[in-house]
Image (cartoon, rainbow, N blue to C red; front, side, top):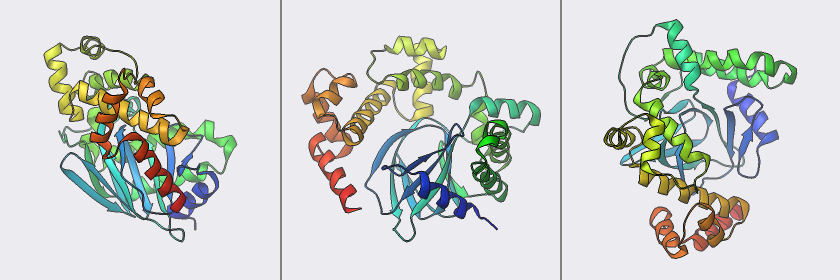
Length: 295
């Protein structure tokens, strides 16, 4: 009988790109494959559930650090800055995980039908053993990929079912907040979506507060509560992470990446880049290239 590990391994082996990402025709669903431990990866993560089926990984947010491995799930319920590293992976036994972005509209719709209880778990990152119902729903999503003609017809209900089991499980209280249309998490998410749409655009805090439907003081307070950063800190990290991607994945120069994400001074960009990533842009890109060649 096919297991979730078998299904993820087979699809990832066939479809993973040079960065180890295997995209699927199911929106929000992707796989990650790595054949060697990685360097530190900085990101501002979207709300997601990550089911690890082989290997190990570590994720940090601020002072909190989480180590997890096969049989565990990582849950992120807000747009928060994380630093991650694949810690256990080899050619014989690659790191493999299934990642599903959480959909607030699906959560809100399910809550209406479920009339689920309260709970106010505000921790935006946590790791727990993967529940059997979640793993079973994930396996059926993977099996659906073998039937391309059925994907457009059945993907919606299977994604919905996986959200249901996540809501019913130990992560339910944290996920539930994503479905509150007028909740602080959803309001801040609207401002974050605007920042993500174009990291280089010039947006005032007043504009972001208006998009969130909040006063300036309320916006500052709730933005930090949800993301752990101030709006300006968030935008800076978002720009630096995008610049790093442009240099390492697309071969952009440091100066062109800096200007693209909105910096007017390459010196300021270089200084802030080194402060976040530990190396200046050129040396960091060279180190990434060396790691890729070694892998």
